[in-house]
Length: 335
Ligand code: SF4
Image 1 (tube, rainbow, N blue to C red):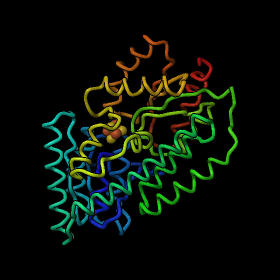
Image 2: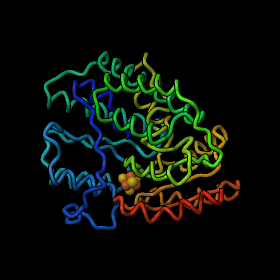
Image 3: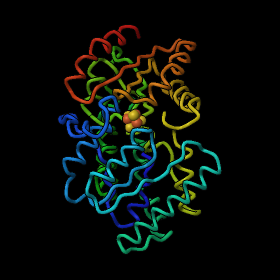
Image 4: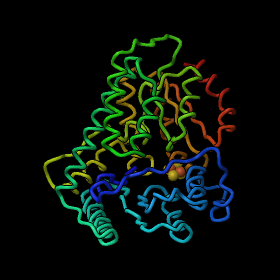
């Protein structure tokens, strides 16, 4: 989620985020990577190996965890796309790291310009930053209706996924329409629903989110990449656009793949206080190392603060979700 959509849009291309498909098994991907690698990345690789839709002409992969980083090398060798670029989004968030990130974004721009015979100007970038900011602001406004018990996270999650896969002017329109519709709703306030915060690996299957909700939880706030991380902040629209993009990615809620981990806890702690959270659910895609590494630290912190905490690992198929229902039921009872 560190791929700057603004650069792709300024190149007059459409930014289309790849998502997993829980209906397929990573049989071909397993010939390239061990089955003990993250289930989500293997699922995406499987789609690449089987062939992506014809209108996907390039791939920008951004430095995340070891799985995403090394699997890019396999994509380079095995998937036939016109344009491929690995963007180095640094682990640290200091000035040296920021300068490095900006230099690498400049290289991405240079390669896009060469490959597609186009020019990406600062003015193009500023226009796309402004458009994305409008979307982010509306999504954040919409997200607040979760706190008023007028919007489910599954709805917001579905909308963010649409935003990530559609023309952004159209995305702004559908987000606006949803916001206007939600404003007219009655609250579904229900005391038996437990107010929880959802965090963890990338969760892109909307039906999984619905499963959590159907177990008796209201996901009043989240710390997810397809969630608050996508809209919590906006970018500066006046200064140097690459500096603005870098600042945005360095200031937004931190991922488990980045350091320091305590910043992630701090962000979650503030959300817990501000949204009257009654419990935290941390979901790891099976074999997601970065979430597994963070789990003992988070578990200790929540225990010290008497915050009910559930950690679960999930497989990437809908049959596997069913095995989790008793754990969700037990957690709802504890809260
Ligand atoms: S789910 Fe975890 S292991 Fe998989 S790509 Fe994301 S951070 Fe990496």
